[in-house]
Length: 278
Image (cartoon, rainbow, N blue to C red):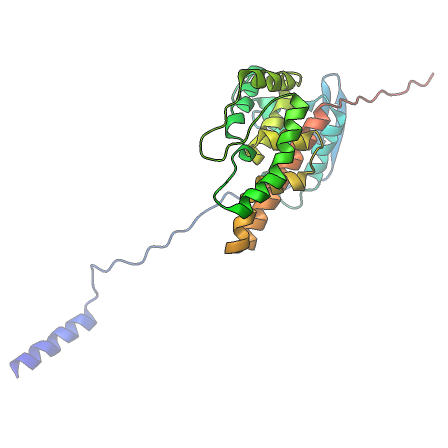
């Protein structure tokens, strides 16, 4: 009888007294910075003595460092103004690749000179994506041979180099003579234009593919497909995740298209001269 009374008393205490040692479940809430709202109605391009500027209503566009946005190419200024004009209620900076390239070239946040940029590009040659091929799987090897080898041959013919692919994890040997030939090609461009090459090479992880698409040997979509060749091959077996693989492909295409456009527009500095009416 006493035991039953004690058990009933314990049950009553459990129900009536809250457990002060109970730890509530923790929930993590991520707070993302909201994109800035569009504060302008129209965009335009202004011709000045220093080049071409982009104007948002009556405000001149400035870089993240506060420097005036000025480029020497009128088509490039028009392209950036169009990019700003395409924004809706909010300014989606992550999708404005051409503007980001221009800001980087103007601000030069890492204080790089032309030699630094050329050396950065040359360091990609021993780790170029298309120079590392796979010989353990016959289908993949044939695919790489049919798709990558013609681009390597084009690169060797265009720059008079002798790049050789490797069939294992050992990095291919790049001679100093080949580096000098490629370096001379990049040295012929301005510092601003080299930012476009770096952006393209970082996107494709390949200096061979970047040069091929910039020199119009390959379209943008094909260059991205070649850079993702092994990934697409594996997707055939493991399946495609639409919100991941498709989004990644479209992002690479947008970045590469901005790089190609940036290089070509920087190389075509078109100036407008007003007609004098006598």
